[in-house]
Image (tube, rainbow, N blue to C red; front, side, top):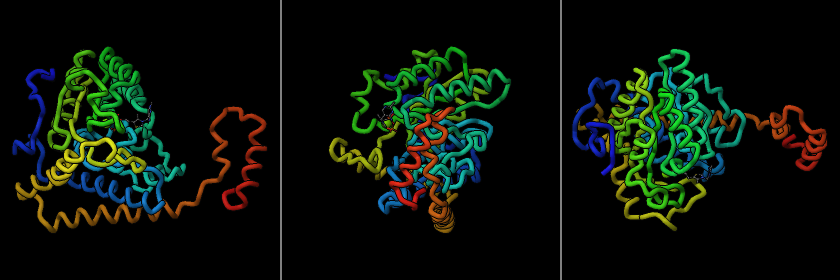
Length: 353
Ligand SMILES: Cc1ncc(C[n+]2csc(CCOP(=O)(O)OP(=O)(O)O)c2C)c(N)n1
Ligand SMILES: [Mg+2]
């Protein structure tokens, strides 16, 4: 039996229990839906763009939208988000244009943004390295007397990394206003959770850092929202960090370069697809009479239009100059760089130079 924060159920749910979340009105419920549809559309289109050769390798987040939208909606705009590659499109929920993220997956420098413009840190590919970044930022906010907090996303596999331990321990010791949000999708590429840890549940790790742990159904956007909102309230009121384990199952390949049929439980994937998070929330809103066919069609068309405009803008951007490969690597570049660059321009011909 997992140890969770006092009074917590073992796995927090809202949608399946047909309850409502206090303080979430009709507009807020629809905004949450809009965000999930935008993320889903971004993700599905990106897989197509990859197959068409228009973006590079892409980390699919299909069925992770409830975790991502539920968490971000529980934050204020002044709060910081630290994404991993799995949350690459999280900036969309802070007004970042789709082309910026598409540029990132195209390997174009126009995909770099200034974190302070959106309070969204750079996408971290090295596993768990964003955790100490987030702990440090949260601690800094506390030292400055700011009400802002930080939320860091990471996976189940990330909990085996030293960076996770250092960040979580630091946040606990200094009572940094941090939400440690673990997307437990059961897999770290082909490594299953059972081979990742002997802990019965990842939420148990919270006890080791002396911080509250909460376990939620990661496919239930409202359960995620509610748990993160409480963690944020705790952080803002000086209560320090919270570890949230959002439990789901990866229903898509790890990334476009992966073929999970070699290792995954295909029946479980099919079951997960039938109960995927966007459909679950859509049915809930329809049951409440908040969402109907017309509104749903409008929301989906808006998201599709945003993606069409995003890929067009990304493809209209001229290629960067090849000299970029040599810039920003050294404060004092080695003398050979000029020769290397000239050589590269010669080899590649006029096109890329
Ligand atoms: C430090 C480091 N080691 C290994 C890798 C290779 N790698 C990329 S994704 C991944 C799995 C991570 O799994 P998890 O933390 O569960 O996140 P998920 O991909 O499931 O969201 C690994 C090992 C890496 N990117 N960084
Ligand atoms: Mg994982």
